[in-house]
Structures are given as C-alpha cells and as structure tokens.
Length: 207
Ligand SMILES: *Cc1c(COP(=O)(O)O)cnc(C)c1O
Image (tube, rainbow, N blue to C red; front, side, top):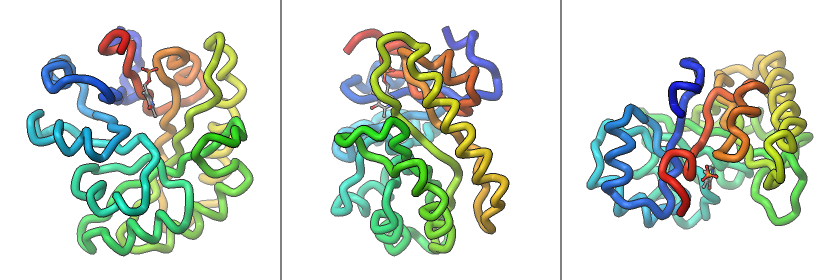
C-alpha cells in the first residue's frame, strides 16, 4: 500500500499495542516515523528498536509526563494549550528545541483533545514566543468517519487553517506539517493536503 502514497507525504506508523518485532519489521520496510500514544509504552519500545527512528507523541500528554516525553520523543504532535507549551519549553534543552504540532479539535467534539479552530492563531502566536519549542504545523483527529468521504470537510478546514496561518507569517515558525488521515481516510487526507498520515491498522493489521 505504501507505493500508493505520494513521495512528498510522510507515513507515520502508529505503534500502540504493537510488539517490538512488528515495529522493527515496519522500520525495515522503510518507515522512518513512529507515533506513540503512551509515554510508558514508548519507554519500553524505544530502547529495543533501531535508533534511527523518529518518534512522535500522538496521544494526549499529561503535564506530569512532559519531562519523560521530552526524553523519548523528537516531536510532540498533541500540544493544545499554552500551559502545556510552557511546561515543555521550561523543560526543553536550550540547544535542542522540540518540534511541536498544535492539535486541533476540528470536529468540535466535547470529549476530544485539541484546540478549537478559531483559537489556533492565538495559540500558535504564543507558542512561537517560547524558547525551546519549534512550532511546525497542525495535527488533527476528526470525528470517526463512517465513510472516508465523511472526513473530507474536516481535512479541508484544516488545510485552509494552515494556509491562513502561513499568510500571517508568524516570526520564528515554519508551518510545513499537516498531520491528518488514518487507516480509514488517509487517501482523502492526502487529496486535501496532508503532509503526514498516521497509520496503524493499514500497516500492521487489526489490533
Ligand atoms: C491509533 C492512532 C492512529 C492510527 O489509527 P489506525 O486507524 O489504526 O490507522 C493515528 N493517529 C492516532 C492519534 C492514533 O491514536
């Protein structure tokens, strides 16, 4: 299936519930980016898979796990508050800034993490001023689709949001990543401008 993904789109393997053998096989198959939902699970996996992997936090990050997360992940894709950003900034190594994506609750689901679309510009502005953080783009998990097409309006909204932010040209931020699309709807996400898709089931099979 990977040959169907355009070259300019990165594939991230979502590793939750997968064994070290499965993750190693996936790296051997040419995947470079790994996504973890849980600090503890990645703490166990990361030492036993090749160090070339680039690790992304894709699950909700509790503030009391921020320090550990910074040791384990190169990217935090789930920053959705200034408080979390400030915490990461305080803990980050001054010389090694951590890459962050702002998670957007594009479907306005009350139970879901992420900042509402209208609050994204102000959050990006504030995060851009924090030392030790590089804001690199946006991430979203739209409402669970019944059909892949159900996700299209949400993906389109995300793309427009990113375009608007780029036009604002916030100093110190390079907004090049749009992380959206999972096994159920990645093709639609790519059509709507995703630069990174996050796949679990499609790569590893059902959990
Ligand atoms: C599990 C997960 C994925 C991958 O889900 P699949 O439907 O198995 O492809 C992507 N993103 C996040 C945030 C996840 O938790």
